[in-house]
Image 1 (cartoon, helix red, strand yellow):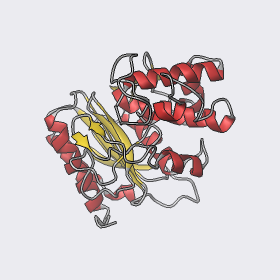
Image 2 (cartoon, one colour; image 1 turned 135 degrees about the vertical axis):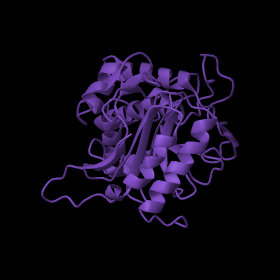
Image 3 (cartoon, helix red, strand yellow; image 1 turned 180 degrees about the horizontal axis):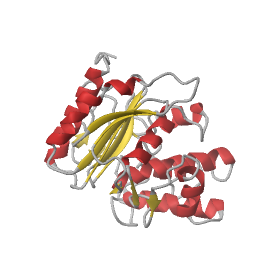
Image 4 (cartoon, helix red, strand yellow; image 1 turned 60 degrees about the vertical axis):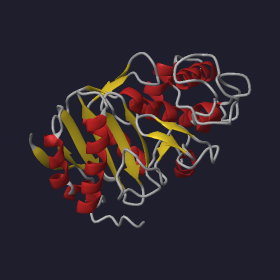
Length: 294
């Protein structure tokens, strides 16, 4: 597997710190999967390993596209975070934060809104229904027009559920990471609010990593905070946010380090990923000189 650095900068753009992460990405060659991984800063500069242009399933990393599109719709005035959506008593905000009371799969609530953190694909399907009604267009089309096309994710397609249906290459996922480091589609204040805790102190299960109390989440973005175990590394700052997917996919953004890291694979999440992903994160941040005490 070839590990290389790629730089594409404008005349006033400083090189990204991610250019120093190529050695850490060599860990990808030890994974029991065909995988592509990369690191980027806020400029269009990245180090990548593996088939960066190959299309992989994003699985639940798709939720980042849907969440960002919802934030665009909020800024446009098409929908409001406190609009009713989903089961009785639930709002757009509850659905984004996995606090609506809906189960992982199914339309029958298992808890009252705002009382527990239940990771829910059904919640994002309900969110898509609300987004479609508010924008008067299919949710998949709105997500494409509001996020995928403006960010130039030309090789990424969303088919099926807005909770898990995206397929695309690492190059596009890294472009999404750059957007989340330096937002252009929404105001920085909007993204900052969305990557802060929504409904604080809710306990719940982080899939694959057990119960956490609290299991902090933003508006569509899973928050690292001080969770242990976690799919990011010990060197990641508590401000780190992102998402991972069952397809062996992840994107995390560490604003304290000014860097995002993503990976896609042809093997589903399992014990291999729970061990390999934090190791990669720590190696990347160590190579970049990130201080684990941040």
